Image 1 (tube, rainbow, N blue to C red):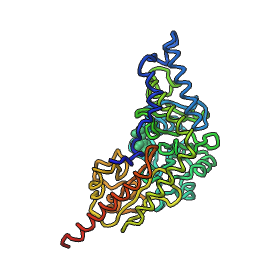
Image 2: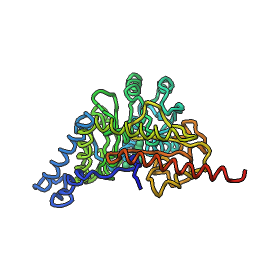
Image 3: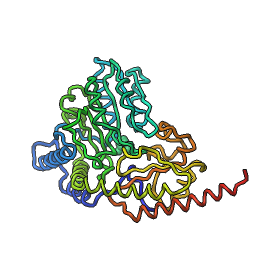
Image 4: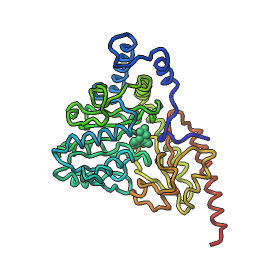
Length: 386
Ligand code: PMP
């Protein structure tokens, strides 16, 4: 099948694999071993990797904590900062359309009575109403968590404006940038972001590795959530997976090299896909007409049986109805419901997500496959007795 599910996972770039291989072979030292060359080599590789990731984000290497991915980064940032800020206040704010790895820990902390959680509605185009956001940052608010690019709709939040609002109110901002890193230009030196999360496997790196950026000034407020050795300045204990780290860094380096051209190429592919799909009967866009990431397109189709289109397409087209983590259940996406879609509309929506290996031909075939499937389903529906 044609793979258009890059928001769930991307193909490992062969150059990333090449960079990783020595660290799965002869370079097996522990980066925390300071008494021999095996350890020194591993330590050097980690330091070089840190600098490469820092370059993509324009931050300092020591502001990065290696994690097992965005889920862990989100949990560490939220749980760690909330614990560290408890004396200042307990109100935390987040949009309803965040990823489960943000919402679940926040809901857990709220259920335990450790925070007062404010969940913000979004507008029908998926964007945050900035005035409503500013008003919701009432006294006692210590932390806001807002994703940069929504993983289901591709909607881009105005993080520059949001970070300025947070700064003015003295509220720390955590950003889940999992779908933004390597796709949009990110300059952490120009933004007041306290913490930022991502995973390497969304940008053609390996699974199971990511990082949490933690602004230098904020470090003292983070309570570590995993204790043990003194790795990562004591903020995240555990032997560093050097091959994964090297792979993550190479993925970031390659993304940075290609970023402006690749962003335009993906944008053109996405436009081509929408151009083709928008001609089909009963189609609607889930998301924002202009504030969207270049790689994600979410479209719905009116009046179809739930999941019918997705099921019909799945032998030929690898796409999804929403987040991979929830796509197994016939549950309407909370993100699409938050955009004002009905349950039926949400369950007949498709997420297409493009990557480095997506081509014009993939897009054209996808359009044709959807058109065919739609014709079949509509004639079946029309033929069915009322
Ligand atoms: N946040 C967002 C926006 C995501 O898209 C994902 C991956 N679906 C995650 C967090 C979690 O990433 P991981 O599964 O690599 O921990």
